[in-house]
Length: 517
Image (cartoon, rainbow, N blue to C red; front, top):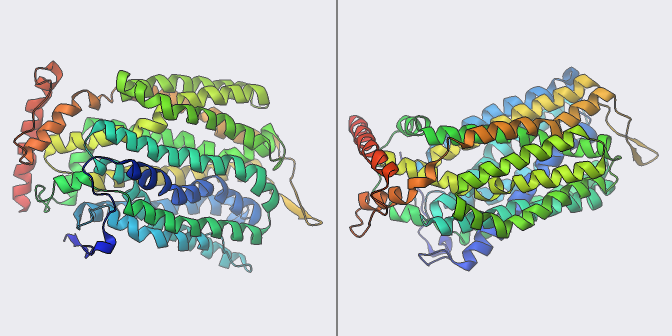
């Protein structure tokens, strides 16, 4: 059944009216709007595990098994809700689009559940364990799932114009990397972490404030975004396409499979890096919450990101998004290897981090544009728009991988003998960690990305979707009844090979849809 939501009232209408992407849309809808929820989630990605291990002291619960098992089980639940949410989005039909209505719903949910994550009551260990499990799943499996899926679909649904789509993707990533990165990477280690220590009350106050900030900013994203692609396809798509058929279309496409594999490997590397960051700075490279080490690591990451705003997209337009990303991962693997060889040397690690982060720029700024090309390719190939289901698979990979990585990381800490800090005379005192703990932390933060970088280089050789995307977008417009749509470069040899494949596959999908009619 389609989700027909009553959102035709003007109070719910987008403040964007233009058919082309506007400056206000970029700055308010894609940069400032998502920054609240993304900031909160970035803080959680880096510090929620620290809150569990150091403030709540849950490392030893169930003999160290709790912090290993619970994230994995929770992500299984999260994966299921992602599938459900993806199907819901694809079947949603409103005057405001199919993803934006859910963005509106996510605003209060993210705020409420973000607060619940940290207001764990004092008392019995059993009560704390149940509160952690319930609040964690309310945030990640419900609230953030709804936000993340609808937010990530805004770039692909905003426009088919590849230049405008790329511009929106850059602004979106500025919000993710620069704004969140500055606060999480600079302000947190320098200002908040030395102040917070393991004081539970201070953690609750700060994280509640961050959760509240997310509410008005997410509403700003809702009002200053527009689903032009959804509007174009209104009435053209067969709403009766079953979920299983959409899933089949996605999971049998070579480009989408490569994209998913790429994202899986990348997420493994970044998950362990994010989990290991604070521990690495506290116990390997620097001293506990010294306010400097983590700041320096983060600054050396933020500088390339600033450069990337101006450099990456022009390079991607000239050499191709795939090619620039592939070249970037060569530097990514090299920089990580330099860090791994000298993990306790501040100077060498900073050099290696700078090289690695330069290499990671194309991935950061152009990946969603590549993913949008994949979605257009699928629509050309099948005649069906599969945004929601595709994004649900994308998010399943993200959440399941993060959960498994979190469980493994916490298991490594427990098995190698991690010792949590304690409060002595009102001051937070860190323990001296065993060598085995330091080695596990070092591999997590700087070692694993050497291998993930090399695998990503190989995968990207097979992701060449953008070469004929202009022709495919023209065909989509023709299928939607646009008589003025002209196929550019119709004599291109690659396009002449692909065109009959698309015609045949669309006919096959149309026949299968008839069976379900």
